[in-house]
Image (tube, rainbow, N blue to C red; front, side):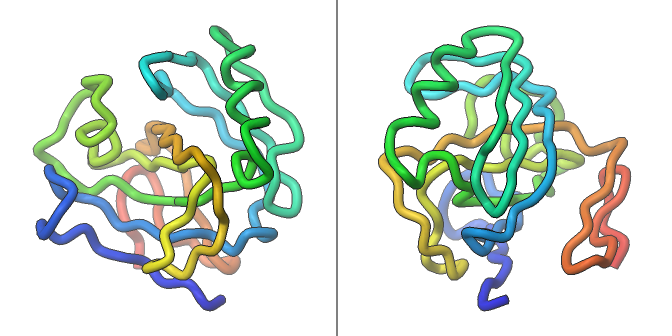
Length: 157
């Protein structure tokens, strides 16, 4: 509601290859586990798991560097909310590189960013951080407004 998906169409943020939006700030519900390391400011956190209720992280864990995850979630009020939800669409990016400008574009993945939202997608969440975390979706499903949008790494619409 009031949000749109933006196509990364090769005009900036190279390599290109994602569609993204900013979720309604109090709407995110559920659990997600990130299969790839989440790097931010030179620090890496492995095995991140997040639970969202009414748009905010209510439970979290990490297999490695959980203290850093905890600290980043506490940076400010907006740090524990999703500022971005995106689907990687670039088939030329095939493996994790630990460079988020590439990793977030891997076809068959999604990424979510804690913190600052994109106004051009309708987002209003403000935060000092925007921390992208990537997970493999070649076995998984995305539903939006109770309809399947994406399944096993492919759009179904």
